[in-house]
Image (cartoon, rainbow, N blue to C red; front, side, top):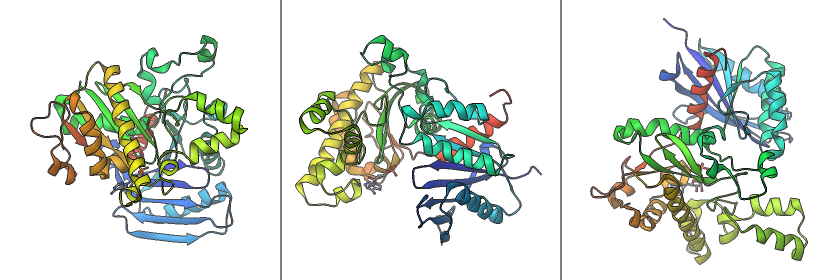
Length: 397
Ligand code: AMP
């Protein structure tokens, strides 16, 4: 009988670290064993929480440690006590930015870590935390193979027109270009869609990853052709706290007329805009949908308008539209958002079956819709686990 392996998937943020442990003998039979998070990293209130595969609580513990290495040590000890005979063989990390260098997952070595450090200026709010988790594990568990999986990598297949800003060439050459994000989610959908609808394997598909961060991807034959996020995860459709596309002249105005500095602009764009800024109530779609306030309704309206408008633009990038997929927290759960986006795309041949949409069926389009529409739950963690296995079984990668 083959050994059952365990794989740790880590998504490290500034003050929290989400994890998921998969068990299985290969990429085809991976099952979630537990999920959880460490919150309050770097504070005196760090907390460890874990659930089993059925989301039943397994642990909720206040921790006295506060630094990342000690907390990761706690996590690995806890996992070791839960594995029931299987062996933790590797860790896979979500790394937000792979720059132009990394177009595929890579096994972490000291040289790779140095190359990742060079990418920090491209994603200063996220990359340092991704790297810190990898370094902390590498120092405490040098024998544990680690794989970095990039949110940008899936978009490297885009044509140059999709990757290039109309700015002086020298800046483009320095790396000021559109990278795109949510790549692990889009890659998962690219694998799942042909299972759901084999006839769409070569189709032009608009994938709407609508969560607290939101973006759209134009995918042709399973490859990214264009996407709404660009140099950073600020661009594109309105999000929970980010504005999406905004006239850069607004930022010049804010600096010149209101005296805002770079940090204030960053806070405004990352944390105070989007649904939260427009509604003044919440960044959370569920709360906005449940609110009677006109400002909440306007925020949802602006979101649906932005998704449909940019979705239509991506249809132009693909030269047509054969299917639409909704995924992530809002895309998977909000029938209202799906229906309002679809209404605005009716002229492109999109029509929903209201009952199927309300029931969150996999296929939610009307029988006579020219463009089929699907709801496919995303699973970035599983994509990372699969990449980790593939990367470690290919010595040259
Ligand atoms: P994510 O970032 O993918 O976890 O998505 C988070 C977003 O999904 C939040 O704005 C949630 O309010 C939203 N969401 C989750 N469940 C629902 C639901 N049942 N109806 C509307 N929005 C939801």
